[in-house]
Image (cartoon, rainbow, N blue to C red; front, side):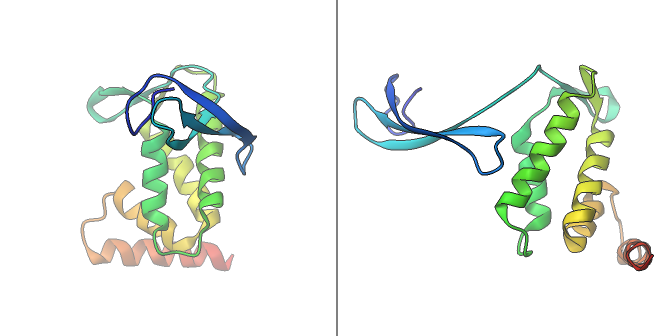
Length: 153
């Protein structure tokens, strides 16, 4: 593993343990050249999944983009990083195990919406505002009323 500080090619693993959600291995490493310590995470990847975006653009599924989107929706909300990681891992597992090598970005968006709805209502509405392309305040109001009615049921 290349050192992020000096770019030396070799490092020693000092400690390995499963991450909090059990979906990855956390490794503490030390550079053999400069002695700096850093952490890496190792995750299972079953196969490359292609995300079909609007206008038929295609790109490889990127977990970090998914993490970033969910984290932005949850910013300044009482949602722990552990719960965000569990949601992202769950969505990634669904994407990888659906049996297809391609998945539409809209399907991933719906998975995120369903997960956020259970996690935090405000984060759900924030994500929906981007995902559903709200144009004006009335769009927020209409969606919030729909969410409030669903919560009451």
